[in-house]
Length: 93
Image (tube, rainbow, N blue to C red):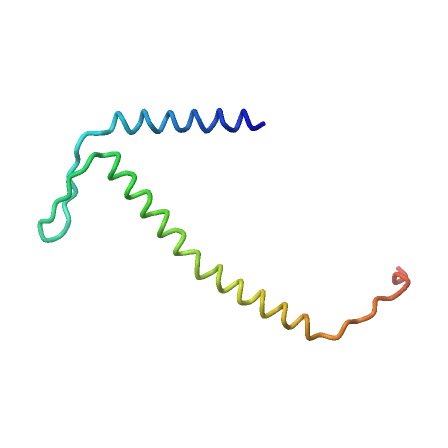
């Protein structure tokens, strides 16, 4: 199984290297106030992909921390409740 995983990783890596080598043409990005940034296309794509990934992670952080606070609050509440003894026999149907 690990050999298959490494083979898939090698294929994906090879594909990305070939993609990067074929897309080295310079591109110009025009920003406000006549600011121009020139870089190879693959660098621009990588920068925008990384920026999108960072924005995606940042957009989820608030939800994760809110859920963690609620889980800790519910655990504290559950710890304060008295332990109810379980019945010895299951209820009759």
